[in-house]
Structures are given as C-alpha cells and as structure tokens.
Amino acid sequence: MSITSATRPGTHHTADDAARRSASAPFVRPIEPADLVGVKRAYSTRRVDLQRAAQVRLDLAPRNGDLVLAQVGEIGQHQRIELPEGRRAPMREGEQVIVAISNRYAPDQFEAVVPETLAEPLSLVAGGGIAGRVVAQHARMEDATELLPIGLLADADGRVLNVADGAIGEAPRAPRPPVVAVVGAAMNSGKTTTVAKLVQGLAAAGERVGAIKVTGTGSGGDIWSFKDHGAHVAYDFTDFGWATTAEIGVEAVAEILRRGIARLSADGCTAIAVEVADGVFQRETGELVEHPAFAEQVDAVLFAATDALCGIAGIGWLEARGHAPLAVSGVLTASPLATRELAGQTTTPIWDIETLADAAHAKGVLVTAREQRDR
Image 1 (cartoon, rainbow, N blue to C red):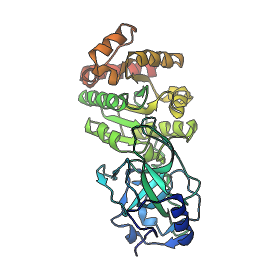
Image 2: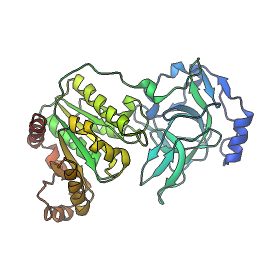
Image 3: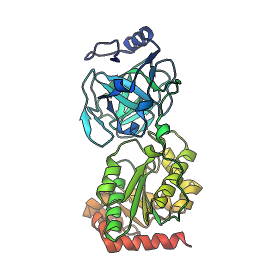
Image 4: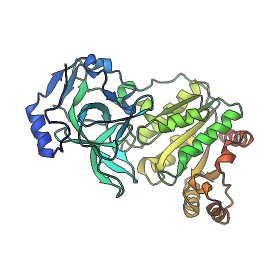
C-alpha cells in the first residue's frame, strides 16, 4: 500500500494547504510494516521497533518524542538526513521519512518546539531527525526543510510510537568507575573533541572507556567520534528515551546521567567520560551541573572554552558551584596566542588535544578523579 500526502510534491506548501490536506485525509489509516520498507528513518528513531507500526494518525496532538511519517516538502537548511548507522543520506522532495517530533535548542541554528497539532507543515530542525515548529533561527541559517505530516506512527491499539519505547532498561548494579565530565561555554566550544581526545588517552593507557552524551539534540556524530577514538561503548540520551533534552526538565536529565553511568558501569568500563552539551547558560545544562546527581556521579570536570575571557568566566562559574575544573580545554587551545592570554590570567591548567590524548597524562586525570571520588 502506498502512503501518500494529498499535496503534489515539489511545490511550496502553505499552512492553509496543510490544513486542507489534513481535513480531507482520513484521520486514521491502517498500514503494514512492509509499507515502511525503503522509507528513510532518522538516527533519532533508531531504537524504536517499526514492526509494531499498524496505523498512521492525524487525530492526536503530537508529544515530545513521537514518531511521525512525513513527506519531504521544500528542501531548506538540512538537505540530508542521518540514518541509524550514521550515513547522511540526501533527501528528495516528495519522498517519505520517519523522524521524531521534539524541541530543539541551538543558538547557532534553530530554536524549535513541539507543535500543538499536525495541521501545518513541520520543520526539520536537525539532521539527526528532529521535527518541530521553528520559533527562532540564526541569521546565517536558511529556512528549515519542510516536512508534510502523513501521520503519527501507531501500533495496532492506536498507541503512538515514541522514542521512549526504545529506551535501554535499568542496568544491574555494578561498582562505579571514576567519571570525568566536560562542560563548555557554548555550542561548538570543543566539548566533543575534548571528550574524544580524553577517551583516546585513556584507551591508550589500557582503560576500558565508556562515554556518554547526556544532553543535546539527537545525532550520532558525537557517539561515532567517541567510538572512533577508542571508547569501548558509547551512549547518548536517545538510548535512554529522549530525542532531545531541550525543555525536558532537570530531573529527567539527571535521570539520564544516573542511568547512563550505571549502564556504562555494568558494561565493565574502568573509566567514564561524560559530555554535557550546549553551554552552561542553557537551562538544562546549568541546572544539571547544580543538581545533586552531578556531584554524586561526577568526580572531575573539564571546561571547554572558545577564548580567554570565556575561559575565565567558565572557571569562576564552576568554582562558584563547587566544581573547580581540573583544566580548561576546547577551541581556545587551537590558538597559541589565546592560550597565552588565558595562562596570564589563571593558574588553572590548560590542556590541548595532544595533552588530553597522551596516555600518561590521561592516566593522571583518572587518578585525580578517583582520589576526588574517594574523599
């Protein structure tokens, strides 16, 4: 059976077009798993069993994490969609994709929210497969790629499939190894590279390294980087039931941190590296660092900075919350001049990627983290 939208592909679609399309289409239509064969599904949806899909629904308000089958409309900022295995496949107007509806918080890209209905087109606000209603966008961004909702994917009982359906279960109890977290000034401040290079150093030192990204927007790039640098196992928040962590609340984020570290501990990791996405002024990030779970689960912190001034600000921000950083790293360290500027203003060490990736140095970081944990 072909599942199609009533609007001709390749044309520009207005809100009125979408409303008419939704009004004229059946609110609930049966499908079979075979109907989804060949449909590009996004990374954000990868853990959900599509064999359960038995219908598409336009009669329900979408919720955070719901899976939606949509037709690609006008191509905009994101021209490719990241598949579960990490390949970014080009999209064509008129083809169908499966993505997750969620919020997005990205100061250098899009701010988006879960829409109240599917009566209007959705926007693809992240290549990992996040769809929402755009609230604001960076001036350098093109308009988001348009997605025309065919319907929410639901099972035979009418229950909508959600990213939460694929969440990893509770891990068996195991001793927790030392945990080092990386927080930063903002997006693109070098957090992922800092984690990856620390993973490389720890792996070179003979550690069984686990890595997790606990906040952010669903995309596999960071996880692949951690694994490429030697992580024995790596997870992100999508493994624990969330397409993104924007607006989910600090308790939910703290639970991701707890469950992720418990899972990595049960996996037999002897060292764990954590990336906390976005900057410390992003609400969930800032509140997580101040949450008791962070102090309970994290033994040492590194701060990723873009320049000397934000390095000083980050050190002070973390110290005020009882997490004096072991060192500053990040984009700053690519510039010898910026590094000298910061070194002239603080006694906090500054570690570049070569230092982080050095086995002996990484081992020293682990020793310090273990000492701080056992105090």
